[in-house]
Image 1 (cartoon, rainbow over the protein chains, first blue to last red):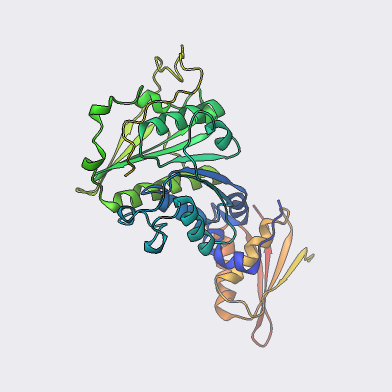
Image 2: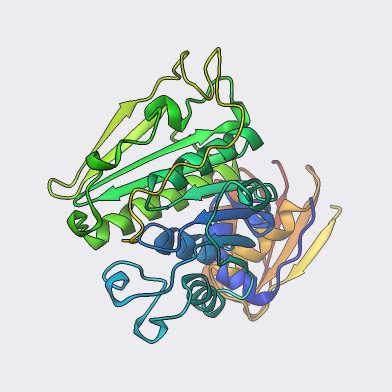
Length: 272
Length: 77
């Protein structure tokens, strides 16, 4: 294997290169990797920031929202002067200022049935940091169909959840629908006004998503497949719950009924 | 002894002396020998130590001038 790093890159990535598990070979892998992040919000901010710092060469970012003052309590990619501009643009500015090695591909659009496969198909790994169930199901089904690893995280109040679905091994990896077969009925989901969130929970879970992505790219350690990690900020405790593949799952089970993408109704149009 | 690759790291300090040596050795073939020239005293200890920790074989550390050293490393893995 051969690679060439500039003086600046040798300095920038020296702490990676020193690691026996990474080295120049691993750093080249990171620079060649393409990661797609759904949502440049509470989860996407830290995951995108760390992936960019790590030198992940191509980062696609999907978000159709603009920066709002109410985002700044946790969405560290953005800042006060960016209020009112599209989040993907703000994210691109922050990342380019951090690391010129990273090519940011912004998707300032709503992800839906018509574009999801096209957006995802060129990426190696997808990180879901979206804030609604229709997007989560759509992204999950698309990743499953395309055989892309999906690192999924969710945050609410003082709690965070994380798991990795490795759809490169669809026969063994559970899928999102094994965990949640269908979106919950609208009444069960807290309305946007009720959905409080301690900002750092996004920071912790988003950073863990970036960790999963880096391990998958480098082929080191063990990804969080078949396990759901639950974090409680009030007790500072992590629990791991085993996730099993559901034989009756409508997407990945023995007799799947879902053969094409489904677009569920958005229960809540306001984004938080 | 056959030297397959030589790396002049005069003026470089830790940890970049090791980082640069490692980047070269990663791209060499198993069994080949790298000669590293150093003029930074702490690196004369640190480069061989780190190379051994990575599983490489340090063949020799020699002073070759005033404030100048060579480290010979054989790539094992």
